[in-house]
Length: 337
Ligand code: HPA
Ligand code: ZN
Image (cartoon, rainbow, N blue to C red):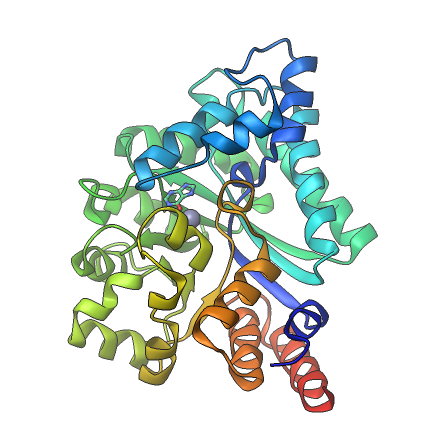
């Protein structure tokens, strides 16, 4: 396709799978480390970037949690989120639903409200000044206990009007969905929407568990559903969204080559798939790079890219009217292009 980059840039986009701590660019990490007087084990931005070579999810998580250690004050969380919003505004992202990991910070003694309010105030300002609408998802860390997730859940209750949903992330294998059945149920009863990472490194059974035990509204990643025909049938029938992250899959060796990214097969099967960036500062790309690199590797057509963009809004937690508005805009633009 001619002008692939221009086409991707121009279309309005929805980011639904983004860990705000994973948008922490090394330049800002150094700046915040310095002002908080915290030492980090690197001498330069280049040295940090050279360390970003991962063989699996856990190797990445170890570095991701280490990076998050320098975040202390509300201003730090504001600056992190604001930098992300400025970046994606330049990529014509119109709606974000972002994850934050409270336990990564409360475990170090940072208060829940410090984290939440820093992020939330930046999102509010982003909506006002940049026109980016948002939803906020609090993710439970699955390598910690359900009791710890419950503590986080309880801390969130005074602020529940600021939080739209809960997620489940961190080390997947060995931490199946059923470990969090009760806290997900309690979260649903408080009106939180539900999503969970499942089938990134973990098996298809974890996707069944996310559906039947956690009763999620959306699956994050979900690649491994392809191992199970009955599961695919179910996901197609329910039009359950799968938020895929191609550059993340490549960097964490979920796939060995972007050419192996099974997106076309998933679309042909009728799955409601969307493309996102996961941890862009660590995986080498925000929304546009994920679309462009994938489109090049597996030769996506203009129509397929348009469908993926529309799926992003369809799978979001926007109202039906808002979804419709964006989908009409995407269709109109793609037709003209
Ligand atoms: N997978 C699981 N947990 C995470 C990720 C991821 O890609 N990024 C941040 N936490
Ligand atoms: Zn993720």
